Every structure is written in C-alpha cells, then in structure tokens.
View 1: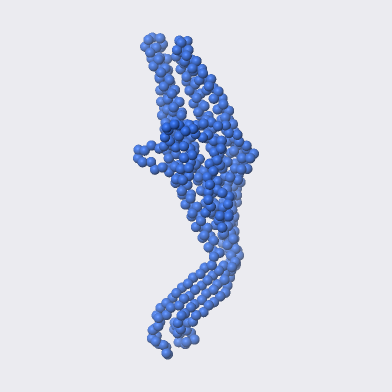
View 2: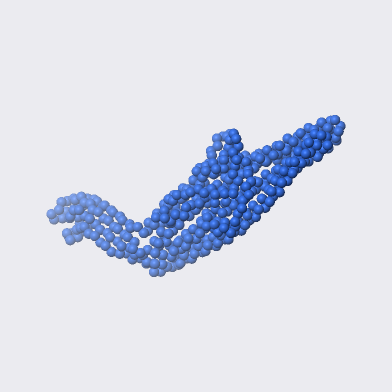
Length: 442
C-alpha cells in the first residue's frame, strides 16, 4: 500500500495567536487529531484494505488451479492369487492453466482501479472531515468573541439604565427614557445566549471530528486563539487547472469512468473463447487394485498421467452477454457525463469564492475604518458626558453604534476565514495522495 502525505495547504488562511494561559485546542492539533482518530476516516481506511483483497480476487482468474485428491479404502473379494481384503490408497491430481481469456487484462486493470477508487474515497473522507473540523473551529472562535462583544455592550447599556434610573428618580427625565434603555439592554440577553449555544455546538462538532469520547457531564475542549484577517491574493488562471488535477472528487469521478469501462470489457469477454492447458494424473503406489465389478487383471487400476487443452466458446449468446454489455455501457456513459459536469463546475465555484473573498475584503476594510472612527467618537462623547456637554441618550447611541460596527467587523473576519477554508477545499489543498500509486501497486 502506498504511503500518504498530509498537505494542510492552508496558505493564506488565518492562523491563530496563542492566548496565554488558555486551555483549548489549536487548529493544527485539531486537524492532526482528526486525521488520526476520526471514525469516518478509520472506516475509509478499512475499506481501502478491503479493496486490496478484492483486487486479489479479480486477478485470480489468471493464475493456475491445482487440486490434489487422496482417495483410500479397503477392497474385498477373491481373485486368483490374491488375498480376500486389501487396503489401498492413491493420489489423484489436476492442474489447469488458462492460456487465453479475454477477461484477464481488464480484470487486472479493474483490480488496480478499485484500489485507486478506495484511496480517493479515503481522500474525500479526509477532506470532508478536516474541512468540517476547521469550520467548527472558526465558528467556536467567532461565537466566543461575539458573545464577549455582546456582553460588553450589555454591560455598557446596564450602566446607562442605572444612570437613567437615577435621573428618573431625580425627576430629570421621563419614564420613557428609562424604559427604552432597559428594553435595549434586555434584548441582548437572547443574543448572548444564542452565541453561547452556537459556540457549545461548535465545540461538540470539534470533539466529534477528533473522535473524543466525552464522559458524562464532561465539557468539550474549546478552540484556542482568536480570529485573524489576512488578505489573500488568488490567481484563477493558475489555480483552476491545478484544482482540476488535485481535487479528490474529480479523481474519483475519472476512476469511476475507468472502472465502468473495464467492467464493460470484462462482460464483453464472454464473446471470445477461453483456452486452458490441463494436466491430470493418478498415482497408485500398489498393484492389484481393480475397478469395481471387474474380473480381469487388464482392468486393474494403474498410475497414469494425461495432458491436453480445454477449449470453451459460447456460440449462441441468447442476449445474455449483449444485454449485460449494453447495460454497463449506459452506466459508463452516465459516469462520463457526471465527470464532465463536475469538471465544468470547478471554474464557476472558484470564481464565486474569488468574488466572495474580494467582497469580504472590501467590507472588512470599510468596517475597520468605520470601527476606528466609531471608537474615537465614543471616547469623545464619553468625555463630553463627563463634562456635562453630551446627553445620556447621545452616549448610549454612540456606544451602541461602535459595538455594532465592531460586531460587523467580526462578521467580516469570520466570513473571510470561512471563504479561505472553502478556497482550500475547492482547490484540493487539504489532502493529497502521492502520484506513485501505479509503481507501488506492482
């Protein structure tokens, strides 16, 4: 079996800064543990071993078939000059070697293709599991940071509520201002709880991907780090043809076409004759063993060896081979259409992700600038409030606008990380098998 190598080609993806004292799982550890312990990947590896056994079965028709039988017994009865009973035993053997069978070459190729199919199915499973684990990692980071922003926003609004309550009790404002501030603060409770639940769900997905068996009451490990934004420049002209060569699903589709073609050739081999050389013989170590009901010594059994050839040819098909071949040909054509459809979709998919990356980057730049301006404005209003120049309402609106801008910036960074992960998946960068499979199979 060929060796495989992991290519976490996450170039351009956002990596994580380690938080001091934080207990969690880094992206690198998450992906490596998923590769080593994920149940779906383990099942795909087992199917690869099964394909290796099926390959031997398909090749078995080209090897010789040898049999040895050793009959024995006791023979009774009287003939002149012989004892009444006699123990006997002899060896009988046969050897058949196919000389011509039109199904042998496609069967050999079919076994090789089956092994390649199982390898690419393992490849696809690895890509799916690593990609799902990576998305769960980013989702957990996003919801954790979003929850922190919302809690900060709620804390500031609760301060405003307390201030408005004091002003209302002092008769400096009406009850509507207090009610409005209270409602706005309470609206964040559901948002904070929703972000918390989404974060816990992402942690569970990470644990599932890593194959962790959580004890009752145990909490899954969280993601370690924080979301980062790293602009990514992609070249569609070079990435598209590279993706057509690298992607495991495209390789699998092409292999399925090859497999269907070889199945058709195996079926069509029924049109041709088969020729096999045969050698058979009997070895009888004693003499005087006669055939059943024989009365003459000339009918006694003796050692002998026979050689020859067997020629088999189906002369009248009755539609059996032709019908099976026609059915298999239709399956091959369907596989070809599916393969071409997948190949045609690659360019469109990469273009869509490329456009998403550009759109998200523009949005991030805009929100980053707006966030900086909103933060300065919030500080200014806070200072004016302390000096009695700004009102509580103006301060509350400014703070809410700043935190909403900060949340929007976090959304853009999260979407960028997801888009980069999608780009790595669409270009086939997660996991690749080496190209020396053909050499290692022989």
